[in-house]
Length: 240
Image (cartoon, rainbow, N blue to C red; front, side, top):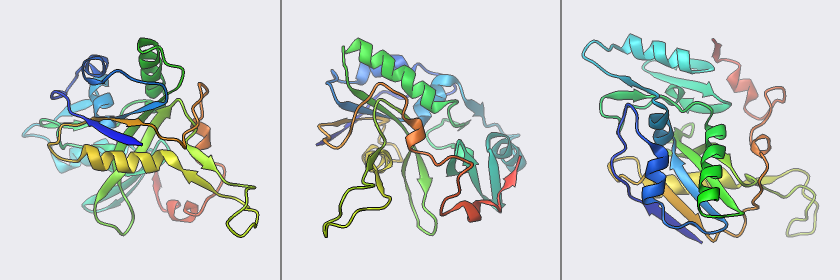
């Protein structure tokens, strides 16, 4: 198994060409490769950037966070938000490596991952390929950032263990391994959070992944109608 960070040119807000970057910097892809792309590249590609000026205030940022978030919880000066069924700070809005811009989360990252998947699959004549769009987030009660997927295409995100036997021969009632966010966390560790300038990464020879041409996004996120372990905590979030 290989994780290959890919250094690129500067990708410049407020708008730049992601497909040109991919074509110029990705090595020749092979079947069963997974291409990891930072969400910031996709956001800049979409022009999801807002210029920060001398007149931009904290109130402006708070207003922007509330506009972008699906639900939010403010604890001055921090904000925890829900966006696209993902728990993330500040609705994913970031100003690092943004050249005096607020960079918003990309629109429809899952659909955009599919478009990138189609482009690269056709270019390199591949049958099996994976795309992951990653962003940084924070674990509760822990310092530091790590990566999480916000969009993907081309493979099943989990490895299912339900119904299989454990090491003592007992049947597992319900369990699966979240492969995609594990990959996202490790990939982001190699890509970095500062001036590494490596917004792309290639995962190669990973045996556990099961590739597909179908949409498997529903396999990752718990439906809004179904409660989970954290549902009681999310009730304190304000609705838009």
